Length: 271
Ligand SMILES: [Fe+2]
Ligand SMILES: [Fe+2]
Image (cartoon, protein in one colour):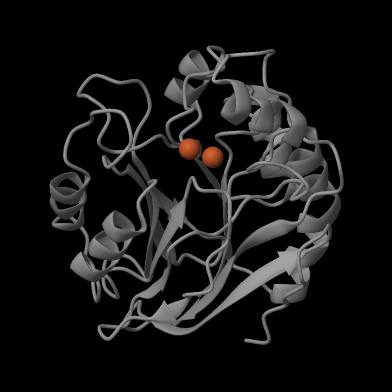
């Protein structure tokens, strides 16, 4: 299976880049499964239902979230009926929506997509490791599903690596989100799971993690709240990771970064 994962979409520039670039990119990469983290799409905070619809129209099969899941309250009723938008698995019991989706592709292959959230330097939540292990006990990679992908939304690289190694051999891809900066540690772990600590964002990199640099920097200088943070509005770089898996095992045979448009150095997978 050919899997494209794109990191946190930030604001209008990120949304516009998805709409403008993803349809052709999906064809170019012959991607079977496209997953986007959408937690910052709405002005940097949350995801509007219309924005999720635009991501699906551009080619996304699933949209993941994170700590900004409920910043747009309209998403609460929406996520209850739109199963393709998922929020972290380890939110408290009774939280609307689901932490995973079992997708059936047009050709009949199945993929499980999971969203989980770390706890180091994040809000207190249930244990993402045990929640993921419990979910995985109901699926068999390479048998009941051809691919399993986890978006692990976390601040600390240590927690992301611990999560990746914990599930090495039981998933196709573990990719981190939330820091909005792509890491260059993409690799296939010894057990066959593709891994990258952070996918990076789909947003303007002339910014402080996607937000206007003046406003964001002022907070560090003054320790005052200042005005509401605004997303940077320059051209976005689409950032993410592309993975090819063996359907018989569900494990990765290749992993490469993708960076397109905007300011960052460009990277095109050749898998
Ligand atoms: Fe984010
Ligand atoms: Fe986040």
